[in-house]
Amino acid sequence: MKNTLTKKIEAKIEDYRRFIYVLLSISTFLYIGILIGNGEKAELQLNLMMGVIVLLLGAAFFFAFKVKQLKNELLEKEES
Image (cartoon, rainbow, N blue to C red; front, side, top):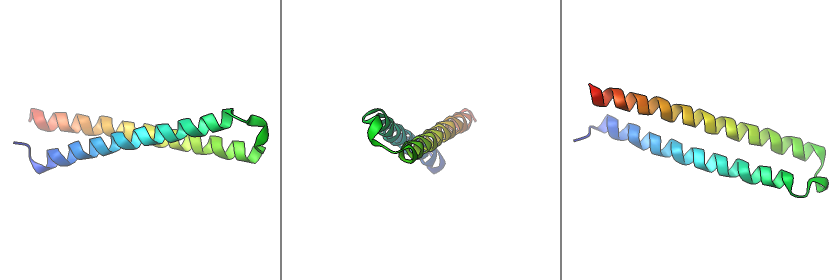
């Protein structure tokens, strides 16, 4: 039987994975928005969208790193 700490870690892993999927999909849609109709947007809009894309991808990589850490912690708890 799994203890509550293990269940909490598994729930966090699932939540972080969902965050990763959402952040990657939003950044993909923004990137497609940059590619389509390039001449219609001002330079400030393009730069702002690119900055947001970088922030979203950075957050996705952060959550991926956290998932890796939590998986390692979960493995250590199961071994002991």
